Image (cartoon, rainbow, N blue to C red; front, side, top):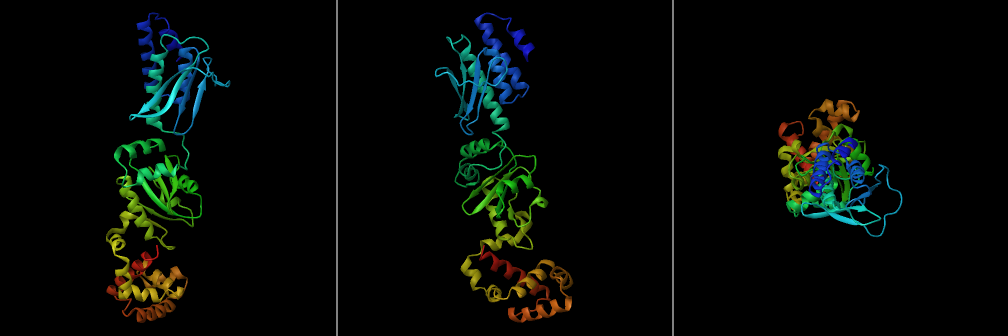
Length: 344
């Protein structure tokens, strides 16, 4: 980079100087330098302190022409240029001169501002996991327009064309810890929205969710649609199945659309509700519905299969139908799920 500066510095007319600045920044952008390297190179080119500030993160970068980070406070008056992206001002670049401005300062700052905007669009802000809830809500809200959603995604560190997964979470664990576990070494953001934790991630490893977390994972769709799917999936989570993918629910997802009054009035759901004071019966029914097998249910409950058989017989009498019959098993699964959805 120093060799490039020396080679271009041999041009001395004003027009050639402007071309030199343009070529300089074109080379930097092709090399995909980050913001510190871009600011450092600009300070060397301008032969004075150069600075960059991003409004969204408050990040300030300043370098002296010798390549060192500037430590002295900036002078009260210096040349500035706004950084714009998608017609929005996202920050400022400047040069700190003690004397009069250079003849090419305006050209240099214009090209620096363009280069900074390109870097921000490519890499986004610093990779912290916790995010501004207002930005996250802009991304997942059905009322956001495309431009507002794109700006929010960019400020959160995601590109507009990324396939984003949205996860709805309920847990006492910190959201940033959960996000870092399920999406290691990839962009991930988390924030509480209303009464639910939201995680935005480019990839999700469901096996890495820690114990004690319940989560619903939306399918790959628009962020707003994915959020609705994630919330629906979260409603289906249980202690036995704490992580639920929306696209694994299939036709069961339709139960979430049943009006609550209609669900309460259903005879099978009402019978399940009457069992709420008997946690052992509910646990037995849940294990049987989850496994579809008396023996596997007994293994899950750590009981002898004859004990489970007796419980299921008694539960069947309470419900009014035979649980070991295939139709009875389907009715029990639907009723148990619909009852849980009433208390999500």
